[in-house]
Image (cartoon, rainbow, N blue to C red; front, side, top):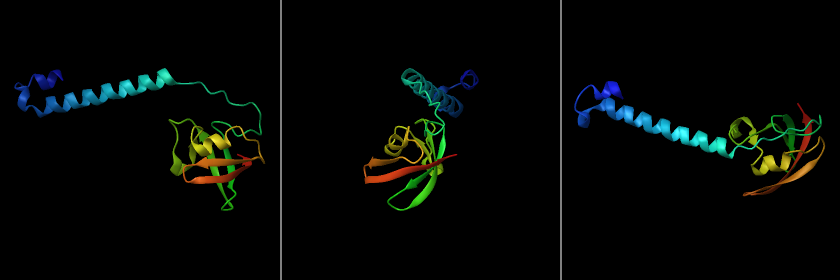
Length: 122
């Protein structure tokens, strides 16, 4: 911003305006990160080998449509539905979290309920 200020009249200084916008976005991002740190919760993963837990991947059968998908349970920040990285706070994640291989659960989603089963941990 110092370099932009040095260019003179700030009322018509595009570099200064761009620098102010960048500063504002950076400050907003800092506030977001501080809020995440303030609200962060440490999640202990299970030492049991057959439990579907955070940062684990499993073959999950969607019983109602008889399809199997590779699903990875992750934190909310890491969630990426397109790549089947499912947040443990989502309806599907809540249903799968801590299930053992072979166990079934019912997912209560806004679109209706459906059953899933952990087939195999990968």
